[in-house]
Length: 155
Image 1 (cartoon, rainbow, N blue to C red):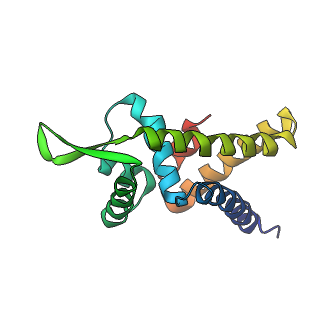
Image 2: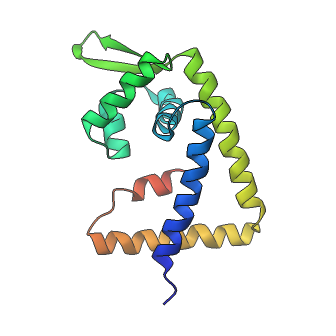
C-alpha cells in the first residue's frame, strides 16, 4: 500500500507550516492570516459577518469570537453594528490589516510559484485532476464532504 492518505497529510502539514511561519513573521497567527485573506477575497462580494467565517472554516463560535477580538484589539479589523440588527457586527479590515494581508499573501504567492515551478503544466493538471478524484471518493466515504465546494471554487 502506498499510504496515499498519510502522504497527503504530510504534504498538507508542510504547506500549513510554511503559511503559519509567514503569518508569524508578521506577528499574527495562521488563523488570523486566514481570516484576513477570507475578508480580502469575500469582502469584495458583500458584507462579512462572524457567522460567515464560522461556516467557511468550520469553527465554533467561541473560537472565531476569540480570534476576532484579538484582531480587533490589535487594529487589524473593525467590527461595526448593523442598523437592521444591532446583534450583527459587520467585519472589515483596517488599513493596517489590509497591508499585513498583502505582505503575507505576497509570501504565499511566492510559495505557490516555487511549488508549481517544480512541475510541468501537464503534471499540475494531472495533480489537480487527482485531487478532484480523491475528493469525490472522500465524499462517497463520508456520505458528503463540505470541503468539495472549497476545493473546486479556486480553480
